[in-house]
Length: 276
Image (cartoon, rainbow, N blue to C red; front, side, top):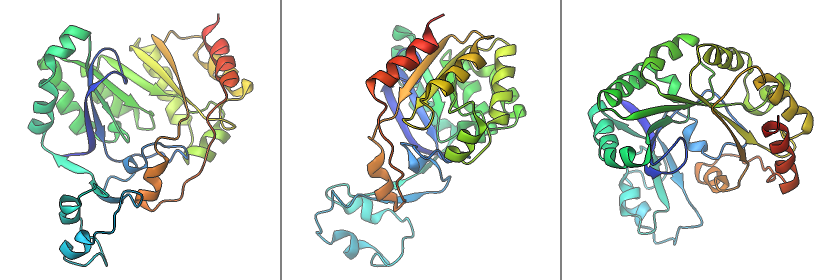
């Protein structure tokens, strides 16, 4: 079974062309700025958007436990007239996932697109990921994985034969910054990235730019120096945005607030990274 929290069709990000993005649920990083906090746990979760709630009481009436505890039965979600309650996380079979992906095959062909497997961390599920990637290739669909890379190299060996493009995150080169804000060391992440470069895998490097975390000139220069011996097909800067902040309240989780990087800071980072 595939534990997913979303499938987005018609996406224009996360790879070239028009894409379907399949989001696996579960992650082994805890990035303090994560804009999809519902992706972190592999388990189903109830999200309650208080700002949407009109206090009609239908959820309490229909809930077998009268909201005193949640069994994730989904009745409150179904009967809520304003979508204030939502169960995040659903299990799919391999055939169900593939059926959704192949629906838009003509769009992939015409736009140079395909399917991207993301998360959470899709690489935590190498068996499931390999199975669906293989079927996508059999259907002549371009494949990409979006990963933070904090997995054993053996997991990459499983999926790479069926993967056309790897979108790879660099949160920070300085390990102290990485550990402080993601909860894990970047040692395995950087080892895996070097190995991907050394086997000439097509790579897009993605750098989430978080103000007062990893957007200093010093840290950007470290990223530039790390990448200098290699030749990624593309480098993307992804400045922090606040669009996911409301999800923390919906999950009952504490929110660590960050600032959007100033335009000048983004421009300086671009000059360092993209000028030879």
